Image (cartoon, rainbow, N blue to C red; front, side):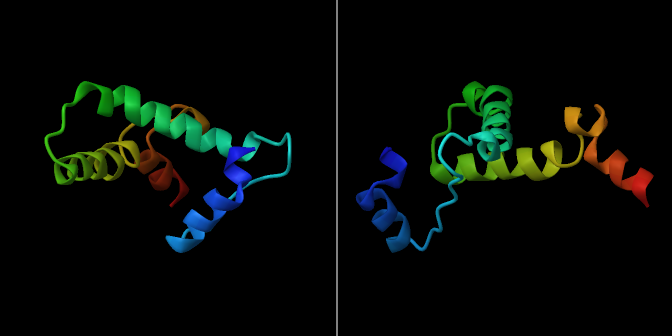
Length: 90
């Protein structure tokens, strides 16, 4: 299991990162992030050719904060936008 190796855990600790791993054979905690990264890649990143890291960071931030978290329809919310869900809950 490469993600549990001492070298990998030491590299994370050296960077100040806390690993998040579930029990053996329990992959469900990773599913939401896998889904998010698939969406990010297919809806944005694979269509862009970034010249700099700063350009990519700016574009990804705008996608997440300006579109994904506000406008994009989410199946977990019954295919409504998060902002619309917040207004309904208020």
